[in-house]
Image (cartoon, rainbow, N blue to C red; front, side, top):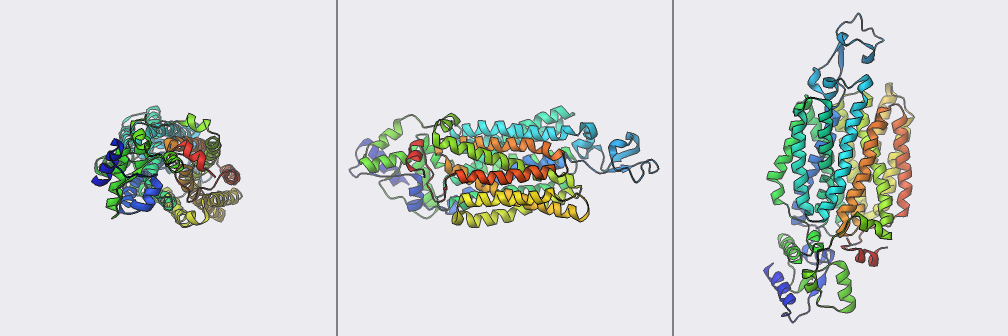
Length: 518
């Protein structure tokens, strides 16, 4: 490590007679550091735990806002034909488990007030939409990926723990909005922090594998909700892990070397790359230095040898979503990926929330749905670096759309209900596969200087879909499945307008992308 930094310093001072070899990060990972070794494995596991926390904060509302069972107090008045609590006087029935078991039973969010359940779910996703854009920009700029992850996890813990201490629906809705705001930055920061130090041939598998943690988080949450069946207790139990993550895990995470590089902090990027190489049992030889992809191209074409001094003294590179829109290449990519994420968000969260319409064991159903996602991750992990990103996204979207279409034809009674539930699980299976491929695909489509901003914008599009999902679900009947089917089928068509990114480098700058894009 010391030899590499010394060589870099000598070169900047002009005392090193040997001409240094300039490499971008992907080349250095492949040639000297290892594309995915023990260092990247440690970073992957510790960072991906944040996805579990994201699942807690995103899906806790399924249990906290559930409509509990109710019992008749006067059987003579509650005849067998009466299955609708709205038709009964309030003194003729009671909630099973008491009023404090959920927000619905505590505040009477039924009948004419039922819309408030969908509203609070949508407010969470509105917060996520805002947070994804803001934290996506902050993580590309001065906060960095690791700093941004620390901020959003701290806010999640604070807002989540404060949520149950307020006595009415509207303060509850406000804190769900705030929790959504901070949750919107968790996934994109964690995903980029995991994938940026990974080499190009391993990045797809690693990126997809992060989603096991999100689905695992939903499964764990089902167990937590079964233990803490009072909604106020559940919020506290599902929020405390965010503080534990800050104290016990985050100190062992490293910042992304790509972020250091595009911010002009080359010495720190080189030091971290040397640490990665050493941890993986490898070595970066003297005279090899990091540079942005466009500088590597310039050095190769013009045999320039003074760019390192320029790199250390120029203003830090940065970008925003405005820069993405200005470039014809990235503008087209942003429009299509935003549409895909919108469809994905609407279908994924819609099918997840739709379990409440089946009137079966909620804990078991959510657990089965989360387990149903696991095979999708396994299959896409095996195929993503063989078939490519585009074919898999098309296949998984059409798979989800087909089973949602079948589900729309099934009635919600008897054996047809069981078949409909299976169609829902298979719909989630397909869209979960789409969702995780979309993350790695989107990250590969945009350069480092705006990668998190682009991911943030696409996360906002997904949150727009999620905002609409509760209102689609609350209509019930076959309507939700029809909407989900159309989203899957139309989304698959959009993918044909995009380039393949399998085994392509992660470009650092717009110039590098423009010179190297397919």
